[in-house]
Length: 296
Image (tube, rainbow, N blue to C red; front, side, top):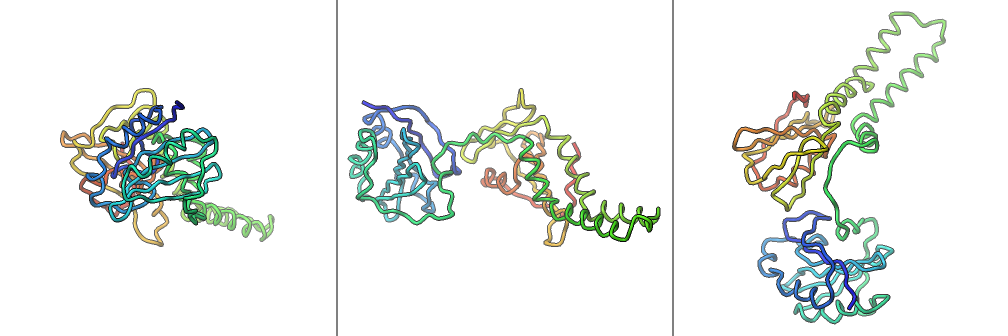
């Protein structure tokens, strides 16, 4: 019989995080479903697309996910190649097996008994596709980071330059030029660039490999990152300048302190601080409101 990739997701996992990923036939997939700790995984969860589940990857860029549902039920989520979502719930796990078997046998999965969901602008594909959770600095991440932290300031720089030169080249003097450069440095992104390069020098050759549900993570040089265990974490501290009018509110550093005294410093140029906090949700969090300058 046809073999399809299936994978497991538990309640403390984040979107795109799966384990036990391999090809299985229908009988092996049923065995995986039968051995899944459904009742244990139902405890204290919010029903959403990333939930305790078994996901099967089809051959047509489609997915079938069997997950926990409301009122002790189960649900099949089917996402087709156009990212349209269909659902069908069951009282008993075995009630869904005929549809799972059809998924293995049918060239085009039949959704006539499924409910089509309205998922406009929800970007639900992330709940089905496996992510690697490797974080490193790339040209694209640098561009996005500078736009998010300093885009408005760079626009101010352009405004001041245009305003300066509209006065006429003949009216330019040394004092006015000094004033222009000072303003551009203070509010036009110059200070932001100092913080950016402070972060960049520290993480340009580093990688973080971390997901929410895995206690093991890696951080360090791209070629040879060191292995760490979340269970040895004492606490983590988020350092940032808070306030809607604070021009440095987009910069942040997360310091992870271990019981043996080791401290890892991870600036948000590498990974968004809020995303990192989600991965460390089980551990004590401290927030410090100060200028987030990174001292290696």
